[in-house]
Image 1 (cartoon, rainbow, N blue to C red):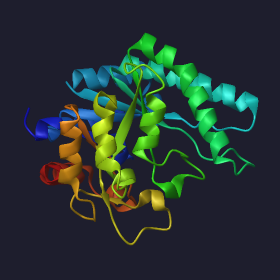
Image 2: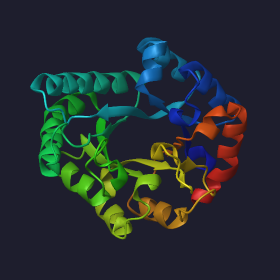
Image 3: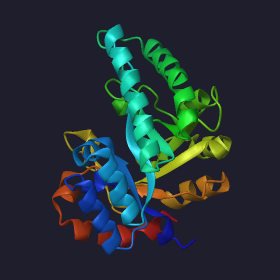
Amino acid sequence: MSVLGRLSLNQATVRPLSVADAAALCVRHEIPAIGLWREQVADAGLDAAAKTVRSAGLRVSSLCRGGFFTHADAGARRAAIADNKAAIAEASALGAGTLVLVSGGLVPGSRDIGLARRMIADAIGELVPVAHAHGVRLGIEALHPMFAADRCVITRLGEALDLALEFPADAAGVVVDTYHLWWDAALLADIARAGERIVSYQVCDWILPLPADTLLGRGHVGDGHIDFPPITAAVAAAGYTGDIEVEIFNETVWSAPPDETAARLRATFPGVF
């Protein structure tokens, strides 16, 4: 497969677009895969969204997102499990082999990070049989430590991998996201250790200065400080041959003409290698 044959447009990069408009954008720019988000899928309707991507001839590289398991209230925890079971079924209906999990930050009212991590492990354990039955792999994503308090207490790939290894390989794996992991001195070794457990590879650049909302401090490949080729080489050596999603959260990118964004993705994507 050619380099551009592995490119996937994560829908977050063109956040204002509907599923239909994002799919049409991919077709116009010969981007063969798309990573979908549940909010836009819900807006379109699950059946309509699935039909749209199939009719466009697109692969669905992942569905974002499940997770957010760390609730203080037992009812809220049960609701989160139910919502994640629904997300697994949605991923299956869309033809997405991976449901990306952003597992959750500290339990509200608690500073006990170990408690939050145990709750995440317990929740994933409940979901694994459902994922297995639907043929969907749960992609445990480690987020940068600056998001540990509110979004994800799993902050290193090695930690995500240790958690995934508690469960069968056909139901649980890890996401390698350059934005969240590029800084980690153990990253390349952990990628090698992950092997077949890598279920998604997501890329974007780390740009400075960080905005007030640090979640939006992402840029196009080549605009920032990440050295992509060693990471990509490690992911390839580990055996991952799937789609590579470009996932950019950035207000400037969102306000740019979508065709301009898609053209830039195609132009900069070879820099990942």
